[in-house]
Each structure stands twice: as structure tokens, then as C-alpha cells.
Image (cartoon, rainbow, N blue to C red; front, side):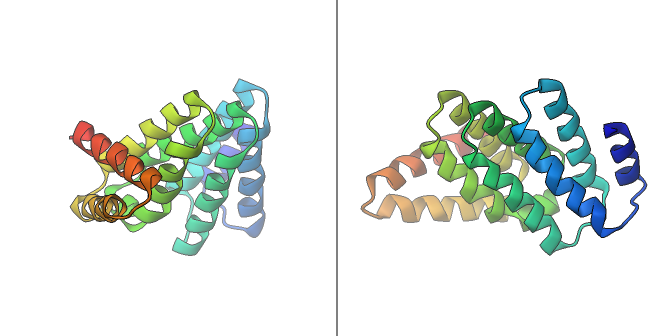
Length: 173
């Protein structure tokens, strides 16, 4: 059934039901206990995000839905969401990443310091580092600007976060 869905998406058969189906697959990606099902969901979603006709608002809605899964109660589900976001970051064209930079940046930065699982924080760090590496100069300058503001503020948690993000920017080259 996943191969049929993937074929429909690849053929760009546009109808409301496909968008609704992708929302269900986004949920299944994190809620399934089967690694095979999560992998199939990830493959279908990647084809959807890369090839299916998505306007900016619809793309943002689906990405926000994926980011909402960062709060899923079980670690394996959150890891699946983080891994999916990493894959999207590494496959999206730079122009699209730059256009959606803040939409990716803030949820990842938030979870870098707030996820209770060490494994999840590692995955978030990998995704965030990929985002900082794959984006253009304007997005990277925005990240620096946010970090400077956080460092200048009095919030110790934000200062620590800024230091982590700056370290990732240095590491990502």
C-alpha cells in the first residue's frame, strides 16, 4: 500500500485526499512501533515534500505538523520526526531552506535544550547542524543575529543555547 501511495504522489495526482493522507502518514511516522513502517512513511513523505505540488502555506502547514511531533511522548517517535526533518534539510534546495529557515530553526533550537532524551538531543543537533551547513549566508547571518541577542539577554538558558548554536556553526564550516 505504501508503494501505491508513493506512486500517486510521484505522479503528482493533485487532490485534497492526498494532502489528508499525508497528514495521517506524518502521524504514523512517529506513532508506529514498527521500524519498517516508519521507514516507509519517511520514504513517502520525502517524495511528497520534494516532488508534490505544494504552495508555501501548505508546505508550512505540513512542516509544522511534523515539528509538532517533536513533543511526542515516546523517544522512538521523536527520533523518527527528527530524522525525517534531517532528511528534508539535506534534500531540500538551498532556496527553499532559506525561505523556510526560521520555521526549521526555532523548533530545532528549542528541542536542542529541552528534549529529555540524550539520543533525541543528539538527533536534533545533527539536524540543526545540517540546517546551518546547508543554508545560504542570509540564513546563517540570521542565526548569528539571534544568538547575539540571546547572549546579550539575561537568560542563562538562552545564553547557553546561543553558545551551542554558535559552536555548531563553527563545526559546520
